[in-house]
Amino acid sequence: MSERIAVCPGSFDPITMGHLDIITRAAAMFDKLIVVVMNNDKKHYTFSPAKRKEMIEKCVSNLPNVQVDVYDGLLAEYAAKQNACAIIKGLRAMSDFEYEFQMALTNKKLNPNVETLFLTTSAQNMYLSSSMVKQIAGMGGDVSDFLPEVIYDDVLKRISSQN
Ligand code: PNS
Image (cartoon, rainbow, N blue to C red; front, side):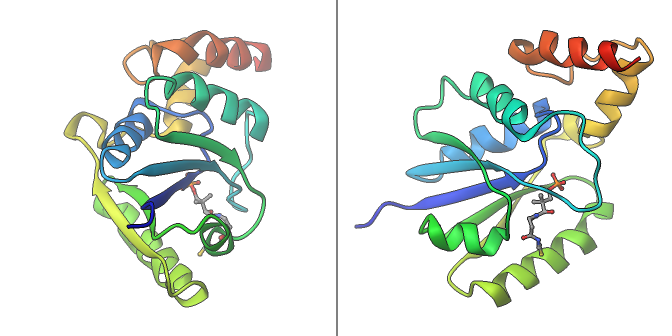
């Protein structure tokens, strides 16, 4: 049987404990999981795509079937190039739903060979987001519960250099 490949796209600006939880659970379901750093036109990023990729790589070094990539283009196109059968997204509160549903339908239209699968977030990560983490860190708050330990210093260094 051919390898079952999934892609897990996102901004990851930076990767949080919530993302890492979804990545770890998805990696257990597929032969190969490609975490891909992409662009969301509506966002202004704190970290470069290369830095976001580097931080994810540090966090997934214990997951042998996970690869990390950067792609500046359409997700549906990237999934086709990688022969992926699934796009993995994490769903937090209902407020994520409408936007994610719209993206899933659009991606299906652009690439009918790929299914979007939603994994529900773990309860402790329900309201966790990269932008919230950056806001708290920027005001000197403790974000150690929200960030993987291996990237904690990278994030704090960048945030403090902005202030
Ligand atoms: O972490 P985010 O910001 O919610 O991720 C959104 C992202 C980057 C996955 C989404 O904006 C995306 O897929 N961008 C790639 C461009 C694309 O395919 N746009 C059409 C989506 S319907």
